[in-house]
Image (cartoon, rainbow, N blue to C red; front, side, top):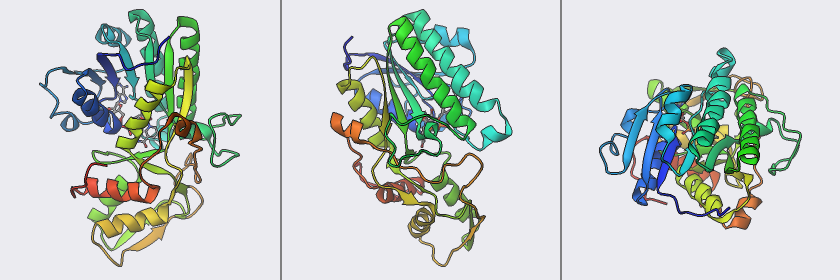
Length: 323
Ligand code: NAD
């Protein structure tokens, strides 16, 4: 089975969200037809408003849990990019069905709609959260056993297993991506977004969850999309998983300083809630081994600190040259 770029009509779940809205822009710019299927639970209509009415763009406001609707909407496409998911990780601790339904069951519905409509190729957004507290950092894709510590990580890992089984049984092909922290403009969640909101409310003191020593890789959404397509074009495996992120990382205390600098503030007091984790299920130290993607010819173009700064500027509406 060829892994190539000859697709015309892409079905994009979660396409009104942060990464999805950027991906929709990219696909349209490349002359592809895009159908965004999204229930707007965390995505926003305003993030895709500029594409509504454009030739080749269709928006369907609907739920992945509505299997008949999903199947009907998916028919006639030749590539599925599945990003739709619950992305409120702490929220999954409060409502314990959130991840099971919107990640795992939703992914099962996507796969089964693909089976029913004869679509063979899938790009799937997994997460570094599947590793839990990995025994090896930087963590390669083949580390194991995988023991996630959040319901989100567990649900995404379950998705990966379903994708693999569907590929094997129904002759499909899948590229699965374990993203590090993806950042950029049009972000409605995540630590950079949260810090900006907090500092807008109180520019003298900011609460930081945990001890600020948590350290993670951050990389720009444009690099993330490049990486997905690089693997799609260059890897011919029937079903494979790729770490996507940068080699460097940023401590949360440093990230807070960058956001403060970009907001033009000074003298902000940081009040740490303490403990290694920001919340139950937070993985304090994340580092991904990205050598598999490097061998395919992809590498993040910015360091983690640079990516944080670029994202903060974009969220604050400061023009940033395209990378
Ligand atoms: P996001 O919340 O902006 O996007 C998720 C989209 O899915 C939203 O538009 C939401 O409305 C939609 N959605 C959720 N449940 C749905 C349902 N039941 N039916 C239809 N639509 C539904 O988040 P994002 O950051 O753009 O994340 C995109 C994907 O990448 C997700 O699968 C996420 O788990 C994964 N991911 C993101 C990051 C990151 O740092 N942003 C890191 C790892 C993995």
